[in-house]
Length: 221
Image: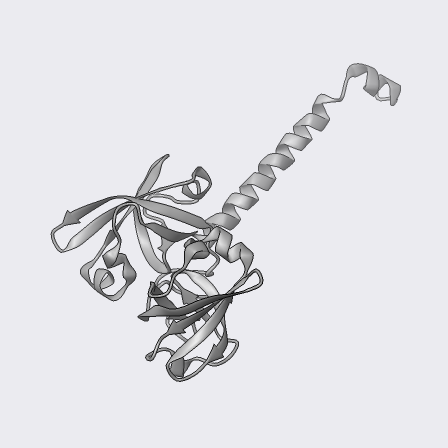
């Protein structure tokens, strides 16, 4: 589990294919010494497992589902990524609960400069937008942010100067693609409500099959 508070920016050093797996090596001289094999690390919001490492870099493997679901489908050498190690159980819990399981991607549709801060607008598929609510939490390229607007076709967030400088969000441009993870608590609530709705619908259908003739046949009349 992660918090969405980025530790450092890292850079893709190499990418090669091993069958349907993409093996990505990350240049991270500040982060690599703190990692060990098998550790989880969030790379622009994607929970990844360290498979190789040295003092200056580490490698991860991206399975087909990850490549299809995220902007890593066309990851290239030189790309900057946001990095965060998994949260320790005895650490303070800032940000919000981030699983590192990206739901899909969104596209920057507009950027407003508001003095030292910026407001970013993103367009996304309806399935993603349905999980984003005003003043709720959303993870964009691994960064925990608060939603400002949540509309039918877009959502927006505000970004402070520190976040703009220490993460890759500061270099975003219109039409850029980002990884999105919606609030996991909201996902469970939505799933629960869907199941309750289907249950009530099913019960209603059962009731609708009862007739006076059937009740009479069963001896109730």
